[in-house]
Image 1: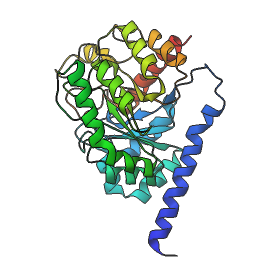
Image 2: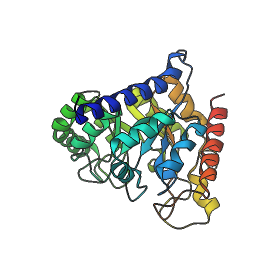
Image 3: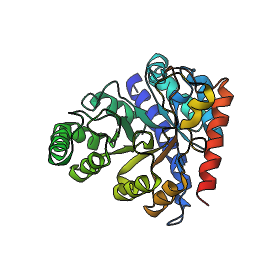
Image 4: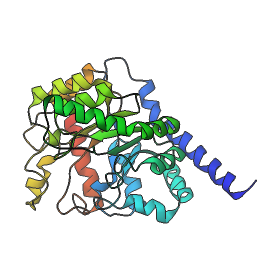
Length: 306
């Protein structure tokens, strides 16, 4: 048996094992009983080494990690330095799945090799931004979203081959920014391998609007960021003000959003999230404090479900 074949077998075995672990809680979920499937964004820990991050993930109630590249994190680059076999062994050691890769750097039209990389780990989600003109509305917006979807079709063919869903985040100053653009994107998609990464931060902080949008999109949301605007994430602020992006700290009441997720029987990823200033630093120090803050937010979301 040659080395290449051994490596492929090793990665496949690790991916299958991790996928089984991640799927187990869902088998027990009853219909209409919302059980959030948590995933941890590596960028929450800044440029901390994967050796330190991976043991923390399970402590947050998650069994999967979302790997970010620079500048928000550098864990995707760390994987390249470690090698795929070593990274797969680390995931297996900590009983984790590579659940998502965030790749704004590559953009929506540069993901084909990354999707093949994701397949080797059984990873089924890649997040990116949209591409096209900004500030449109009405018929012009629909036409621009339609053009973007058409341009994506060759990449969605690869997504179908690799079992990956390309999740486009509604990001500020982007074609896919407004509620209408999000709805057009999923209405015009040619297959289920194109979906939404839903970021409340970039939308009006109106619980009723956000809840209705979740109902409109349903399980065409691939990943839900438990993330609010607070006082923003572009200016350096005192830490207590920066942390207002986190669930349970800012003004946004997540209970109506959780109820909407329950109504659509949401079963995809939920990521407790914020951006620090500057990018690349952990949201708190030391590493254990990041984990504790994610758990504080998770307890708030659990209470919001009651």
